[in-house]
Length: 610
Image (cartoon, rainbow, N blue to C red; front, side, top):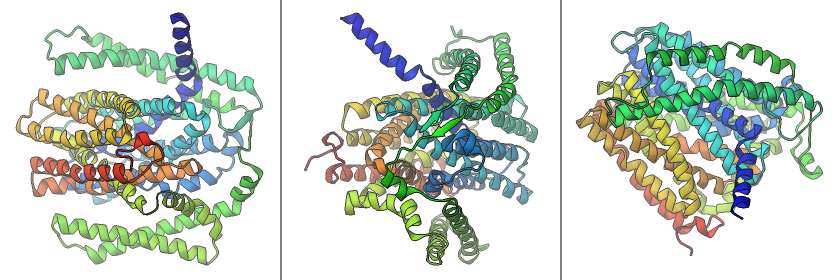
């Protein structure tokens, strides 16, 4: 009987995690996570070494607003087809390949841009390419979310979401710790800044993004019939062998290195049992470079050996007639979106000259004026879209179906209480995101080197966030989701106080204590919040509503995060981290109200049943 149970458990594990789709989801998660730090913290360290002031560096975080507004073009990604590519790859994979190529192009353009404090044009070009990277990465996220939902049944969504998050965190480690190690290896430091070192680092990151391209070309297209299965079988074999040769040895080395760092940095062992000699490290580096050599050949093979596919209709006849949009409608939708964004940009610049100009303002007044500027620009974009619909550029029913109906569905479901839910979504992660925006600069100002920062925040810290994510997922399954969210909110806010202690005692040991606690709390809070968003999302509008919720989650934190450097300059680091801790108080109140007054459809998700 025990053997039967063991066999059954192994079969479930094998069918879930030891499959091609599981590996694809892991690698797509890696592809999604890699660009993130190249927009935020890693870029921040690069700019600081280039002698760019803190307030300007933190304002680069506004480029990441693309992650917060991706819901605006999520309907376009869902409805538009990519000419030529779709005939060979299908709808989802053609979008994935296009966005991954855009990500690589943006990283390369950033690599060839030298940010100098004395050259404003260079900074503006760097900002432009950073926006391009953020936009492309956010668009890739939209496609991957839709791909994940369509490629596996609902019963496996939790497991595949966990694989995606795990891959995403690995991508963060590479573009975080890995990029800092590379920049140091290539010869750049705060004392002796070398643009060439950062250029080479970002070029390597662009090369590593090839993992996503290879994965997309070898993956299966959802909702399609395979007409030449032998070609797909051969692609699976080639990619499987290449992935095993690349991932397994490097994963073993990575785990061993992590254990070594924990032994030396945290446990402060004089003789680590996991010590890595220079020769072993050199061999590992050479092996990693050698693995990259056949990558172009694998890429060419996958491009030439694409199997023929035939899309399958997953809609009823009535739904197909309702959702069908011809090429002209799609082009008009795209044109309306572009014109609305142009109106937003012009309004943003015009309002900036009127409201701000060249006048210096206090942080509070500056934030208020920037908020008015942003809201006014958004209203101008919305008005432009409305006028274009009135003029007949886009059919009203098409615009409503793509942008309005998913929102109306949410408000119809929750009524007046929807505003309470949206408020909670908008501020739940505010404490740790705002504080995290300036964390690397804080570590630098305390005197820690890039390697120390990489060891602590990017390697050990992200590993702890993975552990926190698994812990959060376990908690979300074992207790009411609102209670789990309360725990996550308390921990995310309270751990910011550890940075005050770190400021007063800037030792390596205290750095690790603060980073480990902060990342465990952040990982836990993220996991339970994803569970909460999943409960809210309607199955009819999964892609658009989830994009809306995840965008709203980061909107206000990223706007405030852009002022984190100014707040620190006006006050001090201890005051700043105390403020971010206090930001968690209204979050706790909103969690309580949502749990008390809103029925999410299942008793276990409620804090109190009325």
